[in-house]
Amino acid sequence: MTNISRLLVLSLILCSLPFHCQAPLNHEAIQQSPKDFVQQFYGWYLPLALKGTEEPAQNLALREKSGNFSKEVYEALKEDSDAQAKADGEIVGLDFDPFLATQDPCEHYVLGKATGDGERYEIPIFAVCSGKQSKRPDVVAQVERREGSWVFINFYYPKVGGDLLSILKRLRKDPLPQGR
Image (cartoon, rainbow, N blue to C red; front, side, top):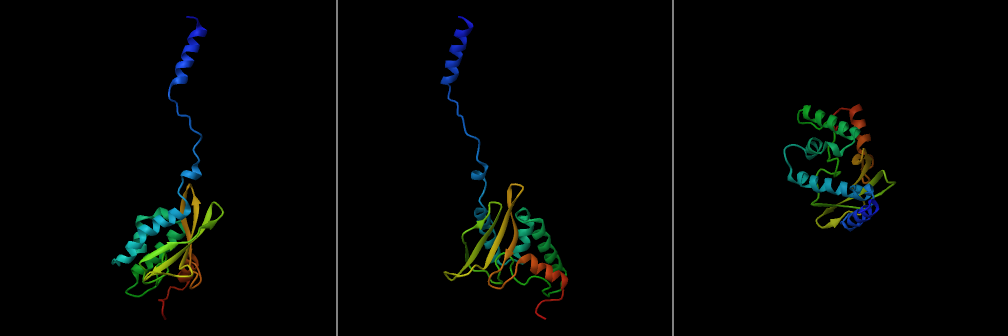
């Protein structure tokens, strides 16, 4: 058998093997959508908030889901939590749940349409209390892709105005108890 014949036979054998040639993976398609990220967090968080544990649910989120928050949001919430832990029975920081914008969570929350530019999105979150969905969002979660993952970078409160980072910044400047 000549070298050319051997190459032909080898080529035929190789061509008959079941090779699975794939196009390069589309990383956008396999990465989690911003809405899925927010839904997963709220699916995990709401049962904790409804349970009413001794420790505020947002503290558990900081401890168990710290990677879900930007450094700015994490540090601002941690500072608020630490200040509250040092206060003797008085509210010195947030007096509402920062992720639900309430003191009394509803039984269910639904997400509205995500709007954004590919790297940063805003996702409205509507409370459903006694089977009725609020007309306006209770919270708008702002997320951003950082280092290949989504993180919360702020929370806006359309019904009362303001946003989490601004409120926490103001509270740091005025550490007196709320309700004065």
